[in-house]
Amino acid sequence: MRIERLGEFGFIDRIKSMSPRNRRALMGIGDDCAVIPFSRDKYMLLTQDMLIDRHHFTAANTAGRFIGHKALAASLSDIAAMAGSPRFYMVSLGIPKKMSMQFLDGFYNGMKALARKFRVELIGGDTNRSEVFCCDILVVGEVEKRRMVLRDGARPGDVIYVTGELGGSRGKKEFTFVPRVSAARRLVRHFKVTSMIDVSDGLSSDMNRIAESSRVGALVFEKDLPLSKRAKSVNEALTDGEDFELLFTVRDGKNVTDKGLSRVAGVPVMRIGRIVAKKEGVSIIGSTGRKRGLLPKGFDHFKT
Ligand code: ADP
Ligand code: MG
Image (tube, rainbow, N blue to C red):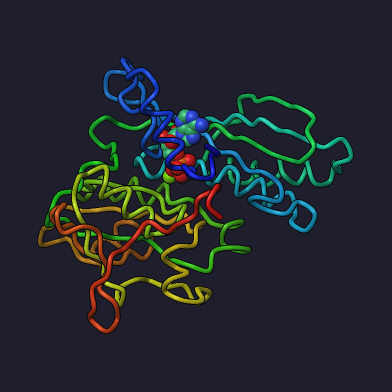
């Protein structure tokens, strides 16, 4: 069998099912970050992401600083999805022999500017020659035990929210977005956030990941989706990746309103649906009022 039949997520499930159970890690494969013991009241968070020329971007026509920004921002976004604070990063590179130093300096400048903003420190990495440019960034963060949010805490009746706008992110937003670290930190201080994920593969896939981890269903309203002006269609906004917004659920209460959450988060937050029982599945109510399944049709590296 070839890997394309399994797909990216079938492959990851297979690795997970074939690996021994974690003994010391609180979370291994299966969330935005791995979670390991750290101190009496904090966990350490680890997340790693790889970008490859001509798969994730085109180095020939994109400035190095945009790629450096995206590479680090994508990992900071995974720390945000756990409600954590990023602290350190390591950078491993595969570099073609003829690559220009202008590109590589730009790449580091892109990371440096973002690192300064989030006060994360570069602490190492690895350098190799390769046929195509690729980079792999590891970010280490921390989170108070009582504040950490996984994907598995959503319950029927919880309200589903998303930050910012969805869709049309390729080409511009993906290279310039500010990871939602401070929005997440503020939200968990004021509200009972029961599950959270960053939308990196399209809302349809990432909503299904929360539903699966939490063993619940979800009902999303198309009319409430905060579509970006750049999104070509609702379908594109649901299935295209690279939005890097936070999708999360909040236990309902009288102060749980779009306005209240937006004020606390410091960014626009929209209520887009509600968690329902698992047997009801994950679905979306279209603009005509018709309900259809919200299938995980987001980005998969081996299925496109
Ligand atoms: P995200 O999109 O949030 O970065 P991914 O979809 O890349 O997360 O990964 C999902 C989970 O699978 C994560 O827990 C990640 O650490 C794990 N994972 C991905 N690839 C591998 C691999 N090759 N070996 C082991 N674990 C992996
Ligand atoms: Mg993620």
